[in-house]
Amino acid sequence: MSEFRFRHYPELDGFRGLAVILVVVGHVLLFSLGVHSLLASLGVLLFFVLSGFLITGVLLNEKAAHGQISLANFYLRRVLRLAPALFIFLAVVTALIYFGAIVDVPWYEVVFGLLYVANIVGHSWPLGHLWSLSLEEQFYAMWPWFVARMPTRRLLFAAAAIASAVALARMLTIWNGWFPYNPGTVNRRPWFRIDSIMIGCWLCVATSDDIWRARVSRIVTVISPTIVWIALMVWTVAAGRFAPAGRFFPTVYLTVQTVLCAMVLGQLILSPTPMLSLIFSNPILRDLGRISYGLYL
Image (spheres, one colour):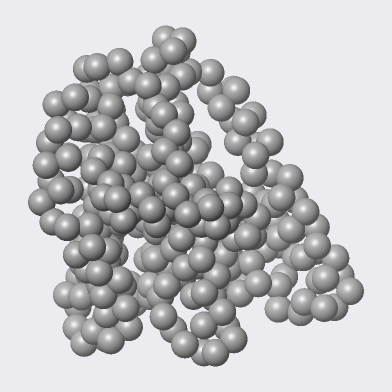
């Protein structure tokens, strides 16, 4: 295993900027025009895959530099980075509830958002987007402990095992109809969705090893990035058209979409074409990426 040094990829700010644009546009289409495009769900998925990659990279970099990871410092940095904006947002929502400007959010759902369990017990529309932040926090509560205590090679297989187990559980649940299929339920619960983040973790660990980096690079360069991006967009849009037609499409939809998102990220990191670098290094996209958390809230 080669010594890992995580570096900043400027294009990833643009990648995050694209993700937040998809979320905003998707929400405008849905809530203002009544068009169910699934662009927002794609944007969130891109966020998840990128988040797994970045967080794992930061942790591995600290481990390589100091021989260990300070979990206390990691969680302190996360709180300082995420909590202030969330507190302000929830404080404003609470004030609007109190004065009657928002009438469809019970007060306890504000607490659910604050405790990062909105993906398990939350239901209201105004706070519905907090489900993804809850999943992120649940990921933070678990994965850094693995990184701190496992050798990197084992970490590679741990990430693959978790992602595969969650994806398989989701697909079996949908295929067998173990409860009435509802994408909002299946796609938000951590035990059905955390593979979206773990595949990014796997990608980061794999690229930290020379042998696995070469393997992944061969896989992601087999197909042109243009084709993969087109496939991702077509697959995303096709959900609304073909999902009601049977069990197969809903069963495999999110898993295929997650793999495609990991492929576009892997191509951007390992073998960026001049066109990809130009697009994702765009100053506007990068600036949007830097403020994406606030925009999302």
